[in-house]
Length: 214
Image 1 (cartoon, rainbow, N blue to C red):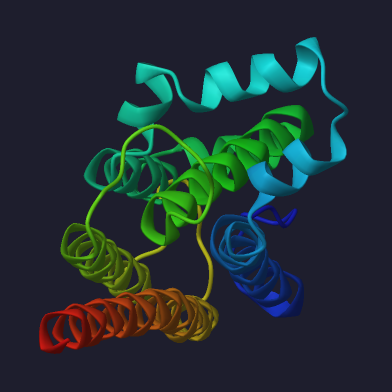
Image 2 (spheres, rainbow, N blue to C red):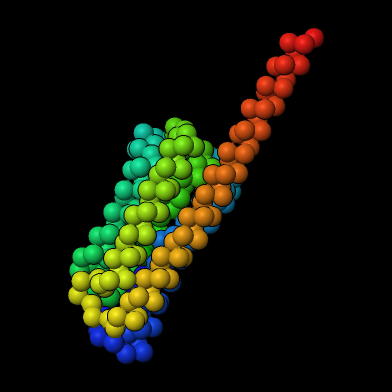
């Protein structure tokens, strides 16, 4: 998310834009998507020995608050709302001037991106169970909101910055197409789940037909 320069033009400013977009894709999108695919909660539960920490983590995962936060539309609104707030207000420029604020902001982007990816993939043992259609529609809506944000950055940079037009456009294209790649990855996870569920339904139908034919 953070480069150092927020000034006008020049090679240094251009590199800052590219660094910002690459870090955006890594911290807010690609990293969370890959983490969610590896089932981080399940992995932590397997590593923890039986005892209070493991039971506490399970209580948090099965709590109403976790279920609400991992409800796909809520997770998408928190994640994409934060990105719009970052790039379409003075927050982005302010984070560049304060390294601590920049670090906290990146942590926030990582966590909200992970929550959205977990809400879409739904691979970990958490409270509730959202159907695949809702998760697919949420992914499409989140992808559209991210694409619109990238297009808006193609036209005008974050408030409080003055980058060269060519640098802004190159950074916006990276953000746009990189976001598409991450969304395709998440869509493939959903497609695998749909295929597996369809296979189980066919197997159950075949088993019931075989039983009825006896």
